[in-house]
Image 1 (cartoon, rainbow, N blue to C red):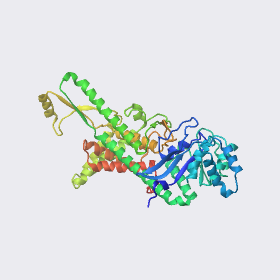
Image 2 (cartoon, rainbow, N blue to C red):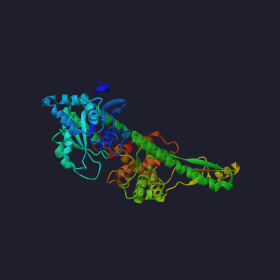
Image 3 (cartoon, rainbow, N blue to C red):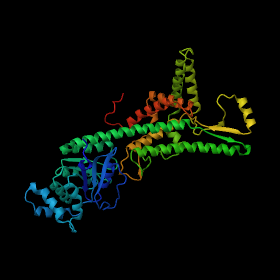
Image 4 (cartoon, rainbow, N blue to C red):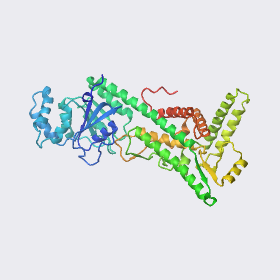
Length: 493
C-alpha cells in the first residue's frame, strides 16, 4: 500500500547562506521554479518541493534559509545540556522557546522541518576553505539527532574538497561530492540509495522512488526517440506546391515557395527540440555548445558551417547510399521470387551510390515542375498550356546528407538535454569532450539500416507506411540508449 504524501521521505536541505542549497533542491527536484540567486539570503522562508511521478509524491525536498547565528545558538544549547540523550529535546526547546522573538530566527526556521521528522542534507561549498566556525552549525545538526548526509557542492573554481571531507566525516555518516550544476541522473539516484542505508524505516519508500524515477526516465527516452523519429519522418516527406498563373510573377513565386519550404523544416526542428526539452521538465534553459570548436546547435539548419561539421563524410554517404539502395533493391528481388536474377539488388546499389555522390553537398531543396504521377513530359506540358498556369513542387529534400545532419543535431540536442542539471540557468553547455557530430561514429550496420529507412521515407512521401516510421524509431531508440544508459538496459551487443 502506498503511503500518503504526509508519510513520504522528507529531506531538509540546510547550510550557511549562499552555499548552493537552492541549486541542489532545483536539480534534485528537476524544478526550475526554485529561485536561485548569487546574492546571499535569497531563501528566507521554508518552501517544500515534492518530487512526483505520475501524480504520486515520491519524496519531498525542503528548501531552508541559512544559518546566521549558529555559535550563539550552540552556546544556548550547551548551557542547558543534561545528557547526550536529551540533546534533541534541547533543540526543540530552542525552537519553541524563542517563538515570537527576534532571536535565532533563521535557525528556528531551518530546524523546524528537521524536528518534524525530515532527514538532513547539509550543504557546503567545496571551492572555499573549511573554517572552524562551521563546526557550530554541524554540531547543532548532530544534536538534532536525525539521519544526516553532507554534500560538498561546487560553486566556484577552487578545490578544498579534501579538507571538507576530513572535517565533515567527523559529524556525518555519509559525505558526498555533488555539483548541483553538473549532477547526473545516476548521482541523484546515488543520494537516495545512501539514505536507504541511513534510515532503514524509509527503505521500502526509497526503493519505490528509485524504481519510479528509473521508469520515468525510460519513458522519457522512449518518447524522445519517438519525437526524433517523427521529426525525421516529417522532414523527409515534406512537400509543398504552388500554382503560378502570371508568368511575370514566376521567379518571385518560386523564391517564395523555396523560403516557405525551408522555413517549415526549420520550424519543425525547433518544435521537436521544445518537445524533447519538455519531456525532461526543461523550460527556461537555452542550449549552446561551448565544448565544440564550432557551434552546431545554434547555427541555421542549412548553414554551410553546419553541413561542414555534421552528418556523414562523402565516402560514408556513398557507401551508405549504395548499401541502402542494394537493400531496397533486394526487397524487389524477394517480392518477385528471384525472377529478376538479382537485378534489383545490383541496380539499387548502383543508383544508391550514384545518387549519394550526386547529392553530397546539396543543402537546399529545388523547385521543380509538378504534375500527376505517371504523366509523360509532353502531355504534362500540353496540360499546362491548357490550364494557362504552372504548378511547381518542392520536396522531399533530396540532399543525401540532409537526414544525417538533422539526426546529428537532434542527437546533440538530446545529449545536452539529458545531461542538463536544472540548477544551471541561462546558457547550458554540452558535456566536456562532446564531439562535433555523432552519426559519423555509428557502426556501418546502423548507418545502413538508417539510410535504407531514409530512402523508403522519401519514396513514400507524403504518406509513407507506418512500418517504416516505426523502424526508424527503433533504430533511434538504440542510439539514445547509448547517450543516456539506464539501469535495466540490456547489455550492449
